[in-house]
Amino acid sequence: RRFGALLLQRLDQALGRLDEAISPRLPVAPLSVERHLAEPVTLTEEIERLLGMLATTLKTDLERRGEGARTLALLLFRVDGAVSRIALGTSRPMREPLLIRKLFHERLAALEQHIDAGYGFDLVRLSVLAVAAFDTQQTDLTGEAADDGADIALFADRIRARLGESAVLQPVPVESHLPERAVAIVPFSEAPRRTTPPKKPDRMQAPMTIFPPERPIRLFRAPEPIDVPATEMPEGPPLHFRWRRALYRVTRAEGPERIAAEWWREAPGDPAASTRDYFRIEDADGRRYWLYRQGLYGGASQIPPRWFMHGVFA
Image (cartoon, rainbow, N blue to C red):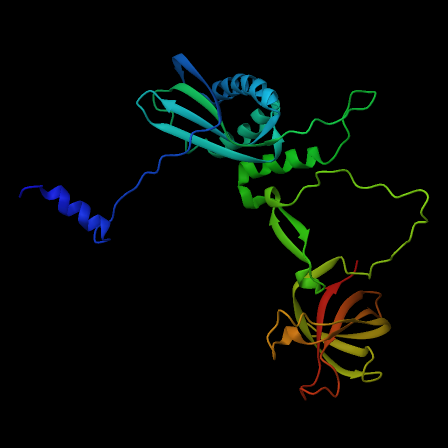
């Protein structure tokens, strides 16, 4: 009675007996530009035109700081106080107004049905939520900079702005000699970028050519088991095999290429912990396959080797 019901409510919330809706305060953006409008706007074309003006103003601030935007947010304040927040990320630091407008054009097109303009927006704000160092590129005599993948990055950013972050993925190498673990698929924005140009070979040093082992153009996500009734010798390639209910006769074979298991990762008894012998196989119709034998004949485990199809060549 002395402190009222609010004290008991706050104690229950602190002890977890009652749910408490928390609206966290977002951090202040390091850079923001905005424009107050005497007449509210409702059309997407008008918003994009204002966005281009704000991006031009923002470019001056970014150039002064030697930075580029990595995450941008467009805030549309409605006359009744409601706020629409549209954010997007870039795979590279960006400060060119035309490129920023292109990215938000894709984002606004994707969210057009979800943005309620009401009686219009009387305040438009463009904020930079994350920045990165912007390296100026050296141009040639024609005034054009060397193409280092900027067009691909812009294309990927426009697709991500319209379809989402997971719409564009990129394979990146992983430190593993097992084929299915040597590559990881990550979002395009999280893939590592080259920050320095590739090192040129020394002219005084004789080049040494190293041919990597041949790999199929299509690698299966998971190896598929195949039936091998007979082999030419215990450690040799199969004479024919059955895969997906079809029988294939082997005419040519190369191998084996032995790939040992990653013993520091796999638990004893795990099938992935067995040694693999890979063969490049060609059938009677000229199709080429990449298959392997898991396990060794006469091993200590007394488990007969199994055969798997891991990929197909072009």
